[in-house]
Length: 71
Image (cartoon, rainbow, N blue to C red; front, side):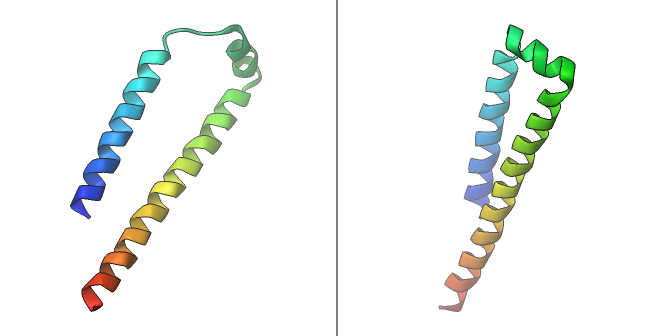
């Protein structure tokens, strides 16, 4: 489990660094979505999906490790 958490943290750090590095340039189509407020809805949905996937993987890991301990 510890190895899985390290992998998740590493992936999140790389993803965050990539987002910060590419966030410097603003495209014209982003201005339209940002002015309407839709970009924040899209980002919230994507973030919710990613967090849900991480929670699912963590719970699946717990269940698998519990089954491994039984046998």
